Image 1: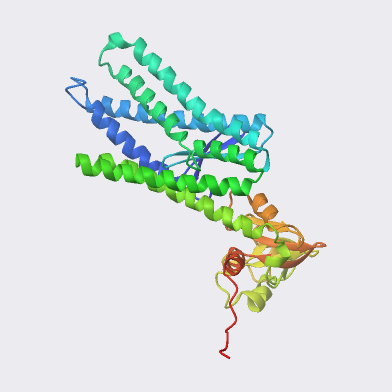
Image 2: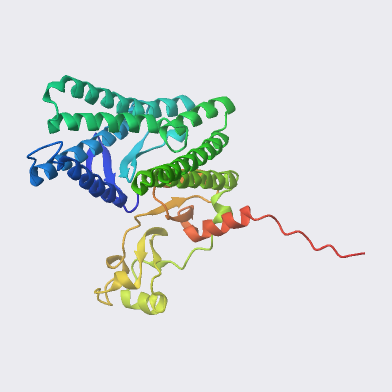
Length: 378
């Protein structure tokens, strides 16, 4: 969820939006404004009112997406599965829950309520559209029809068996139940997701060729490519997880950086540790426990005779682990926060550190085939 904007909290769940959401929100509002401004369909419609109706309709579309994700979150909580938040992004949303730590039936139930809610909303708006048939081309009836169409399409699209769509997660839950292996089920579902994504891209290209409407074909191409990339990222994550299944923190960690005593004066620490190390941060310890970090940036404005404790920053984004803990367990504890620094602590003493670069190098070594010895001709 790094880089997203927090907009509120519902039922104890943080609601965030990805920056990509702003793009689709503006594009959707502009498209709807053009439709409501059509004087043939809505004669006498003022531009300001058309814009207001467009903003209202776009808000209801994103409200429908939010209800979809809240359904996932609600079922997760009902199944005693922790939920860390909801993020709305370019083509929908994501509920960050630790479903993978449970059972196939949990993933099935948590997943199926999402498209179920969306299709129910589609049915509701379709009924309202039918009940207001006497309003002819009244813009409110048009809004009901548009929302019915959008929710039914989104619900159906979400059921496509392409991971990470809900249909792909339902497929994974079935494969998980059948094979007994979450890792294998994830790999198969992600492969299917790649195929579905490419099929959608091909459909968009075909639409463009047959209709000469670039915009009509651009949306399927963009959505299919987005799905393909997401499935590929899932496949890569599954591969990394497989490489780390038998690996401990001690196997990956690097030697710890020099530690700085919290009681030392800032001037001493600057001369001894920080000069010439711009951009680096050093752990600050008190009673052998890491209590924060200090760098040249954090010491700016702090008098040289003050202690480092007054110039340090806290350890947000830092995770502690024991050398014998499995890397898979640590990554699960890190959750959605990518790029965390992991401090390796044993008996209250800092014995190592894992930076994102350390993990990347370890995975690269694991993924590379061993070098074959040169064979000398006899």
